[in-house]
Amino acid sequence: MKQLKLKKKLFFKIIIIIIFFIAIRFIFLTENPQYLPDLNTMTITQIKEYAQKNKLNLNIEYEYSNKIAENKIINQNIKNGTILKKDDNLNLVVSKGAISIEYYAENKINELGRIPVMMYHHIMDVENEYTGGNIDKEGYNRTSNAFKKDLEYYYEQGYEMISLIDYINGNINTSFGKSPIVLTFDDGNSNNIKVTGLDEKGNIIIDPKSAVGILEAFKKKYPKTKVTATFFLNKGLFNQKDYNDKILNWLIDNGYDIGNHTLNHVDFAKITSNKVQEEVGGLYQLLDQYIKDKYVKIVALPYGSPYKQNHSNFKYILNGTYKDIVYETLSTLRVGWEADYSPFNKEFDSTFIKRIRAYDNNGQEFDIEMALNNIKNTRYISDGDNKTIVIPSSLNSQINNKNNLDMIEY
Image: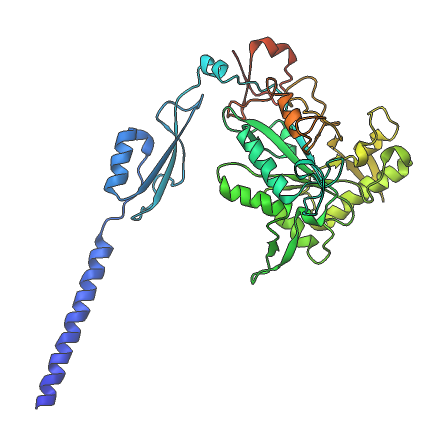
């Protein structure tokens, strides 16, 4: 009898527990979901109140816009109509309105200014007696610590990295008041992106002291700043045969570019036209095996040769045929000592671009400091909008608006 009573009590307890959980579930199911409304129908104050009421983590950044009215939304990370959850991050970019002509003048915006293209080779740590992190007398190679300092120096001087191909194409996407800078690496040295192994998912592990390791650390330190570079390779690619395929695809997938430095690092001025086509076309065909249609059709000229475009071999660098496959090169890079023109300047020649040797010589002989000081008053200074070209009216005779962008003069 006692056992029967105990069983009944247990049965009723189970029933009560089940009813409790059903009631809780019913409450949650019948609770009305909260959808994000159209924020552009609200004032900024109302948006802040809405976020607080619905327990959203609101982050607002402000940018000038010539197309979006003041205090209206330029970008938002959550689309209108999305179901919201407690503690969702709502990130907004809000317009500060159009930029005045006076503000352009005050900030010396000049999108016809000079753009530095920096040339690197090895990034490695060896004992040396040379100045400021140079490994060799000529300063073609840098220590890892010197390269870190270079990146910080560019940042402190108001430069933001852009890709070489964006420079050539006139897609200059840098922040208002900042200046673009392009990084290039020649020879495909293993210390440009040194792989130390694979992780449990088969992804490459990159040596933090290699160039890409340093660039990736810089990216984490300054997450709002674009980090990129273009690597020009020979037939050894990055000289890590077990990883070359993974390296190339990782670089492309992570915002870097790959270009052509010939199969064998030849001097174009000392070979036949047929050999030129073999060296250029052969490297393109090698890259096709790994990253077809993903690399840039740009040749970094070994030794900077030929030094003039009227050399008989130069045309075969730009156009040629190898093994019955036709190639076309968009641009070549020189070995130089000064910044080149804006892509919107009539003087800009995309087929023969100047570079600056990235080395330290105490501000002399066209080292980094001297080269950037030389363009202190003539550098490209961005309006923050890659759909417009802003220039002082005194420079309008120099413009080549090849992309038919909106023009603003002050």
